Amino acid sequence: MTGSVGCRDERPRDAQLHLANHPAAVAELKKAGPAGATLAPTLQRLLKLKTRSQYQTMTIARQDATAAVDWARKLYEGARTIVQS
Image 1 (cartoon, rainbow, N blue to C red):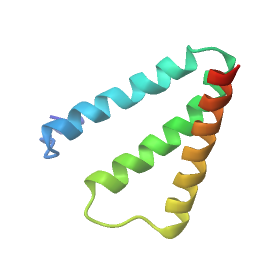
Image 2: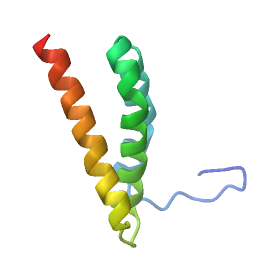
Image 3: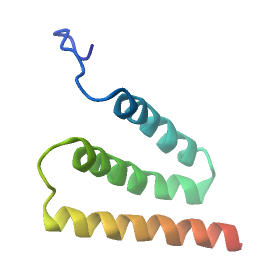
Image 4: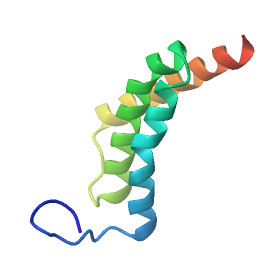
């Protein structure tokens, strides 16, 4: 059930579990120090778009897909910098 109207969540169970973990992943990144806190909003935007594109029947716009690639690149470069330091 979701929301205050008691609507049943029709997404597959694995989708429901992943959605529950997204906020936890962002929170963990925020706690991982200043670099993680800086990257957390980017992860949050990327996960929101991932959820929308993965579980909806409509495709996402080219602009959103381009932004997702940029966000993923930013996360990758940030992680790479942290690991190399």
